[in-house]
Length: 257
Length: 257
Image (cartoon, rainbow over all chains, first blue to last red; front, side, top):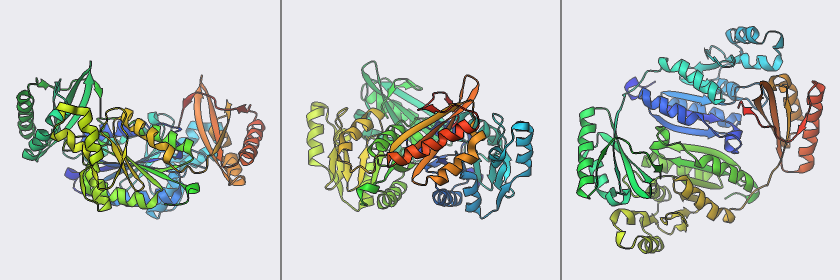
């Protein structure tokens, strides 16, 4: 694992149903926003099918490359739920009943516990459980890989339970300067020059359309507030130089990006 | 390119704003559904940042692996729009003004054409343009890589323009058997057995909750209708064997997957 100051994250969304379009993923955006708040940038997301060799390869590649890997999907009780076993294979670990998970499921299902449901008590050997406050069947962690459910409500609850244990990175300062009536294309070159003059911050331009007028939200992100403020000041000057009015903060409109 | 009967697709969503959570992607689901209709399975989606080396690596890896690669995002006029140039690098092609794109943009912008906007006339040398009926600035194709805008309305219009040129694969037959009052966990083991008995089809189980009752939609996909029908018949038998009622077609509910 790398230094927590440079912590990075990767999300693997596992499920044929997302790739076929049958199901619309709702976990990416939630995790992206949460990780951004924690100062752990999400560097990559892969959406992959329920194919063991593909899951094994992606898990092994990503766990070597990123501080944290989160997976969603494929931990239910049917034949196409192969994430847990695939993660065991990726780590070369035995796969079987986790006594703690078994107890949770037996307590929950009582008389209704059956073979299929007890499949959800299996984890790679030695995995640490991730609590599922919605429907009990737990997720789990092996080293830096966090295996969570695909159902958005459950995935979000699982993440909320573990996020306090993640070593956060740099919490970024983010400020926005916006303008209406000045389109992105009118200031794009100068925007690039301001970015070059402020290499310690990231400047993003998010154009929008509002009541028939083009405008843009210029978002400046950086580790230190004075650097962010200095770039914002240059953006205000640029907007005023082309005859626009610089607004402090975000303007809502129909986003064009 | 592989045989069109086995055509496959990959989507690269390029943009820091999607990974930070600022922007919610809307292109994946649209393209997934369209490609499924064309019989070209979407095998993988990667969401990657605006970093040249990352884009180059992903493009080269995916264009070798899949029949079609679609990219969305990063072809606007600001400094962070580096997709077009990165694709040129991936192919080892020169990058510069495309005369046809230049004419389109000059005709459209007239007096308002400026340096920044004309950046959008640049493509890899020899690229074929993809029409943008929404805001003119075109996408482009190099070999099997289709570079499209990130704005959903534009990405969708671009894809609609090119989809007739894609060599479709096997159009799959898809039928659904559903049931209410029988939860996935009650039939999961037998479902796996039915899947094993019908290796030429794919059976997916999509559990839901409807008016306090669990149920599941069992979706059977395959190339040939008789094979799909045979698997559906077995699913009906299974549902009836556990005391449930098999419904023809999909039941709507709160999806749990």
